[in-house]
Length: 474
Image (cartoon, rainbow, N blue to C red; front, side, top):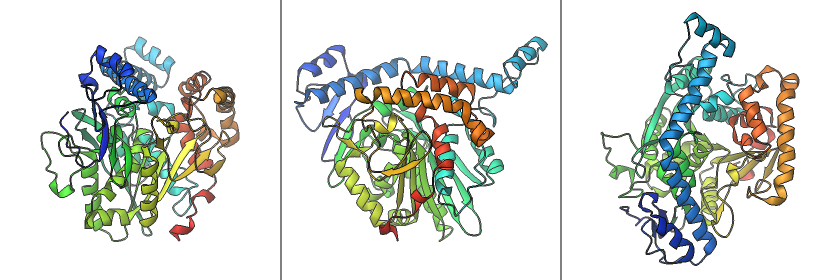
């Protein structure tokens, strides 16, 4: 596997394409990693069976995802087309009537009205009018809505930002993943500017339900350990712009290959630099949901790796990082390093976790994987009441003793989906598709809790006192 790993002191990289059946079987019964073609590790042996078992599972899941990638994409396309076909013709009844009349409206996947599967779960477009700039919840509410619409096509995002939010759409981008050999990372940028503030928002897209490449990034448990920084999740670093042959070179050393899209980290930092130099008062925030949240918090981490005036400028102007349903991205040492850097540069970091959302509880925080969260965790319960905690309850999702309480909570969420519009108004009405997801939550509690709906509600209904600055920011 051609990769300059000189930037890391130890590492463990997985390459599913090189795996054979007997390789997989051997890793369960042999601690010799050096003989495995699909494992590139700084350590020749792995004596812990639990870790070898997780390597086995990671490889199997990635191989399976690669095998079903095209069928997954086709199924996803079909489901999205059906959902948009119904909405384009007003309803299922309208679709049938239009079919009989020969006047069926066919949706255009790149149009400003076409919604992704995630978008169909929560169709809200408008920002909460009662939350204005200066309200402690403003950046969080704007960030979550930006994270939500990041799943949509560029025309939809532009229309939402320009016409509904009355802000400036800066662009929507597809970025290159050097390890997957294709553009699998997406983000968009907007500018919220008025007389009293100038805020640029960078929103990374999360994992799309039918995107096998994004799921591979999630299940890739490869890691790099950087001297003084700790271990970091390899799949997320690859999505952000880690390069096969050179790792994380200094930005001045990166030469853009015009035959393919740019790498996310380098392209975004260049765009931010130009925008921030236009106005000394301009600031920016980074956000994302799910995988997008992991990329959002890794962006400032990579900024700290690179020394120089440009990195200092960006770190100085970074107002905050807001992540929603974010998975763990590194180990304890990385968390301690990042907490120190966030305080040093006065960067606010808010990690939102709703209820039993399964994704923030993965990868596991145990002796086998050693991943740990850091920063301010805002935990919201079923009533959207918020607590500031060090770690969300039931930190590792698959806990037998928590199964029944989680199912009871999921039943409460299902009941709430029918009653919440009466209490809070039509803006909180949940559609049929999301109610079906709530039903699925009775079998797998935490699946529906990961959807954007509850995170949007949390930023709008939760208390604003949790956004008051800690003492070290004053």
